Image 1 (cartoon, rainbow, N blue to C red):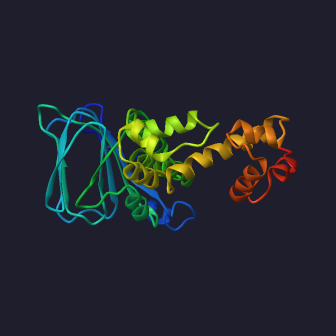
Image 2 (cartoon, helix red, strand yellow; image 1 turned 90 degrees about the vertical axis):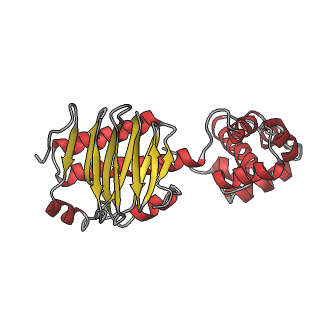
Image 3 (cartoon, helix red, strand yellow; image 1 turned 45 degrees about the vertical axis):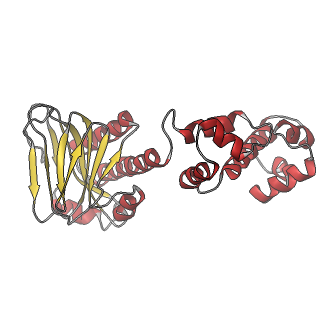
Length: 288
């Protein structure tokens, strides 16, 4: 098994390149394959330099300590709960000093979908850092990748590692788009989830969370793809679906429960969201 020893506690797996070449020709793994992965705990004086970059994209998640990275000539400081993303072919070097050595998990990725996954994180060679809010989940996924590849590099293991890597990249995207605790967007979303029984006015909600109405609308569009009212309506329609599925309440009663005095107007909104009326939705075949 191609595992090397280095720093105390280090884990390092390198997938043989002929195996990688086969993986990128197979369904699913051709879209994303993990070629290398590892873990460096408290790696004092750790340094890597690749003047011509590497043939894979590199993701490094710093779970503790601090380090630095020079990517395409620009120097960046890397701290705990941050991910460093280096696109394939980009010159780079990185490392950590002796005072606050970083603890990092890392993986090299290749495949047709990797550039798009990186773009979805909003990072580039000029801006290679992104925050990792759910650090425990990110570390667990990287540990899963390393553990899977340590067992062997058979097609099933490579497929499993690809799935964990895909989840890792999309989780970083979720962290970027959705707000953290106390964020105005998070407080606004929580308020809307608690107010499904009545309409909400955007200026009043914006004032409640301490931002302008236009800025709040921008935050919602960035995170959800739609405006504040569209998000609130989607929540109310989700509640309506739940009530249609698990209760015997009438359409009129359900409409009233989520703040629609006019059941016919509620039915029009429901049809707009689901393509069928509430009654038709309830009568559909729900056999497991």
